[in-house]
Amino acid sequence: MWTDLLQNVAKIYQAGIPLTLATDAGTSFNGVELTAMEFQLFVEKIHLTPFQALLTSYHSAQLMKIDQDYGSIETGKVADFLVLKGNPLEDVKVVQQVDKQVYKKGRRVF
Image 1: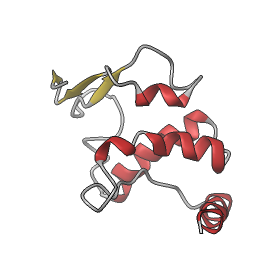
Image 2 (image 1 turned 180 degrees about the vertical axis):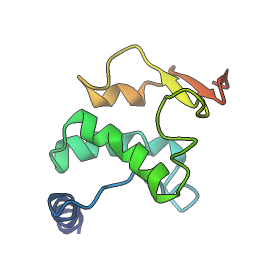
Image 3 (image 1 turned 135 degrees about the horizontal axis):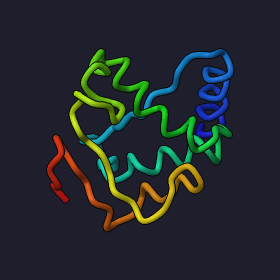
Image 4 (image 1 turned 90 degrees about the horizontal axis):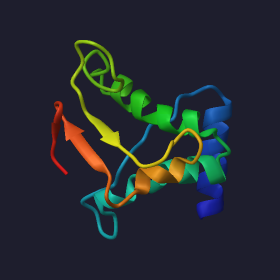
């Protein structure tokens, strides 16, 4: 099953369709803490670069039509971001850092 799913996601990406970061949080065995692992799966299983994997977050904002306010760090946008110990462009797994700092609307919440 997983092999078919991953092959289909790879085909979607190769066809030029933007992939989005998603979560099934709230369903059985799918906590929100697993969302950060999706970046790793994009890199390891779909063969995206770390940048392409991280860009799926922006694609999510575009899909929800909120990219004018969210999805990137720019003047005038809502400041939701992470502070990490490593560079996710070099190793996308650093977004899984347990003690990362999480900022929402410019204020640290975790």
